Amino acid sequence: MTKRIPISEIFGPTVQGEGPLIGRPAIFVRTGGCDYRCAWCDTLYAVLPEHSSEWVPMTASEILARIDELTAGHPILVTLSGGNPALWPLEPLIARGRAQGHRFALETQGSVAAPWFASLDWLILSPKPPSSGMPMNWDALDACLSAAGNRSRSALKIVVFDNADYEHAKLVSKRYAGLPIYLQVGNPSPLIPNNAEISDAADINHLLDRLRWLIERVTDDHWFDATVLPQLHVLTWGNRRGV
Amino acid sequence: MTKRIPISEIFGPTVQGEGPLIGRPAIFVRTGGCDYRCAWCDTLYAVLPEHSSEWVPMTASEILARIDELTAGHPILVTLSGGNPALWPLEPLIARGRAQGHRFALETQGSVAAPWFASLDWLILSPKPPSSGMPMNWDALDACLSAAGNRSRSALKIVVFDNADYEHAKLVSKRYAGLPIYLQVGNPSPLIPNNAEISDAADINHLLDRLRWLIERVTDDHWFDATVLPQLHVLTWGNRRGV
Image (cartoon, rainbow over all chains, first blue to last red):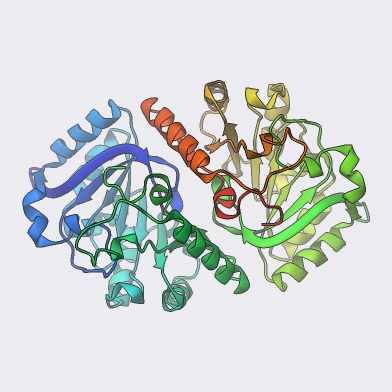
């Protein structure tokens, strides 16, 4: 219970901008550290070891106290994100938070499974597409889903920048038929400064253009089980942190 | 089975832009005729009797044939909208469409209940807020929900333009505690030409501004059960018909 988790940031309440919980008020708890280095990562400050001095080691109690402070004690959806939050022992946080009425969603690429996935309300798996430059680990993804146990609480979320990503998403959906799949329009803005700095200004017109492309791709393909969504928070606030 | 329904338009596949099914590929079937006259109605061409000559009387078979033509025979989510689609005997369409693998969502203000609500996959009730100029009929809304039977398939969607609408939404949510509630940012663009003609150009910046306002209102209020969403199709395509 006194284990400490490296926390990059805790912010909110705001609304979840992505995936099956889009539009839901949430607090975001972002852990530091990641086993991946995606080409278009938009949270390098929670990934790269050179940022680790900014991460605050916190116990479950301290994290919950901060959540309660932000919500004035009202129960809320807590999104655990990263980095890769699956790297850390989050079970005490989830168990104690749920006992207080909070609900927990975990966002992870699915490269590392943990037994406590079964205690989540939502497991949102984002296997990385070819444009990320990361390899696909099917065995790890299988392990994540079996750790979660009840598939009704699991969903797939795939970022799509281009045709290769789209084909990858179809492959994933074939393997996990029956799991809800969310296709998310890739946000290229963080690419502009060569991954060194994140630009605040998201190009909304470009994002909407890519959203139209992706909707057309899916409907032309008669892929009517997929759900197509933009990142609502990027449309709303640009690439700003803390919203 | 040979009863004819006045159809204002059938279009798609596109994605659902609103509410609990946001982002899902769908065909829209819009019936003509409405018992309401909302101040900011964005589909007057499916509401006012002077447009009734544009509505095509179609049987369930004809509607299904058109859906199959648009989807090349692939099962899809069919959104029944209006006008107020609850005014028409849609049971044969739903029964036969479901047997073909389609799924059906009905969007209605909840002023008229029908026994066939129980055969829907989704009942999405949009009781109109004060800014609509329409009265609130609680008994009718109760009747709609009991006609649907299984509340897990029902959801509330409330358009919010201002504080009065917001307070109304809170009242509705109190009466139907446990039902999912979606707050939707009001789209003022159709107001500009005095409701006579719908402008194509949605003011995206204004809509995003109102979205930020609504998110802040909900989070300041600790109303963490509500889901806040914009109209995705308006952001994507403006106020155009047929998308």
